[in-house]
Amino acid sequence: MPSSPNSGRVEVICGPMFSGKTEELIRRLRRAMIAQKAVVCIKPAIDQRFHPTAIASHSEMSIEAIPVKDVEEIERVLDANSAAEVIAIDEAQFLAPEIVKVVERLVHMGKRVIVAGLDTTYAGEPFAPVPELMAIADEVTKLSAVCMQCGQPAIRTQRLRGGTERVVVGAGDVYEARCRFCFEPASRPGA
Ligand code: ADP
Ligand code: MG
Ligand code: ZN
Image 1 (cartoon, protein in one colour):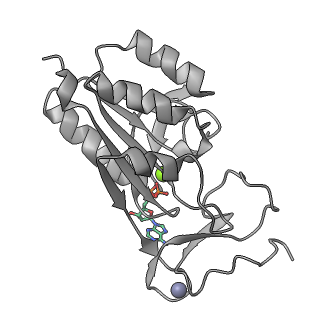
Image 2 (cartoon, rainbow, N blue to C red):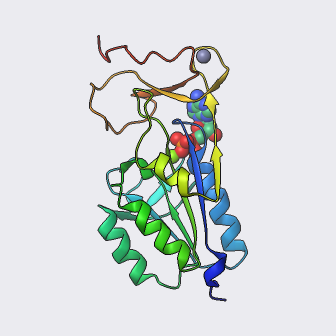
Image 3 (tube, rainbow, N blue to C red):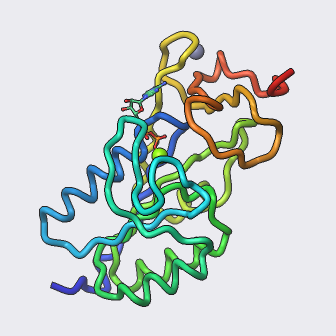
């Protein structure tokens, strides 16, 4: 059944690395598939961890995904998949600000859009465009990981090495989850 124009909604799943954003995204997509919805899942091609055409969690759950290099390509993929009722985007922090307008357009077409991404950078600052997507969302789910220093809920991503560029793609070798008290924003990676 095609989605009606008033049924569109935006769901944002955010939190630090290892908080289960991808697992939660996969859980919602599996349920949508059980409900016989037409689903399309997209991820920025910059994130080549694990598999080029799937999203995969740190716990090895995975689901097929279309890799895209930018927001324009997302629009092309969605034009080619116009029957999709549920559109999922993982690792949204790697996308340009134009994604906000694209998501709004999709919602007005009646689509359910589920976006997952980091809400803060390794420096502990808002990680655009995720905060902007949170602002237009119908529902925001903020997940926490487990602090690798003290075991409390973790809302920060600590970079352990790899320099000071905003984007350094990596997993447990480069990053760990930390609570706000154990997080060390000023620590110079490698110093
Ligand atoms: P995200 O997409 O938010 O990075 P994932 O969904 O890929 O998270 O992975 C979540 C899984 O990562 C957890 O279910 C757990 O198995 C594993 N994990 C590894 N380190 C941690 C940690 N510090 N806190 C919580 N989960 C962790
Ligand atoms: Mg993830
Ligand atoms: Zn801690």
